Length: 245
Ligand code: GLN
Image: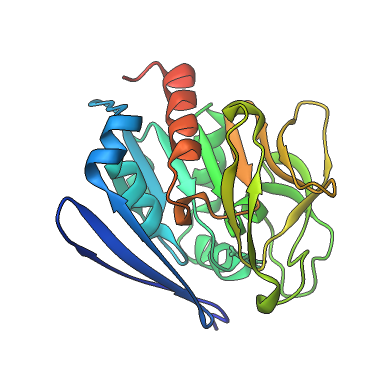
């Protein structure tokens, strides 16, 4: 049974869209201006295709941001839908549900092969848990992860739903301008192997964004901030790793 879900309502209005997102009683709303997006981040890559794993969670939001950046974004539910993709996003939601559905849809091995072939993957929140080699507070309901990133994560590291929060983060790749990050029942990275680059930490020291080769993971939901810098960063990585433009 799914014990958490994210609902999104969005509607177009005068050159942009408004959206309201709800997860377990917590609402957030954003307005995204088309013009502002394409002016600041108009990095259109006409030949690129990005998949977004659409089994459960906040996949609609990621698809919207990637499309706003001028790049084709496709939902992925079945193994053959990975064919021809240049990169993949695993969204936030509920990691046990996502991993369960990955098993039911026979996606575990195809997803591992996709990443091991060097195709970039961005995992956000529950998506980060799916990528991790170890989950320190795994219980009997925790399933096998994709085990692609050399990190140990702790689920629900900030407590329950009421402990969700938004904070300004400094991200090494973005210079001095902080990123307003949304944490919803978020995990943290407790340990990271030597090949893992730390992209961001909370002021108290918890690691919340990392990169290992062509894999990127965030403990927060970059698709819920009105700021596409994480997605732009990921698309640049896709260009660098695959040569697609
Ligand atoms: N707490 C969830 C989990 O452990 C993650 C929450 C989220 O993705 N916002 O899977």
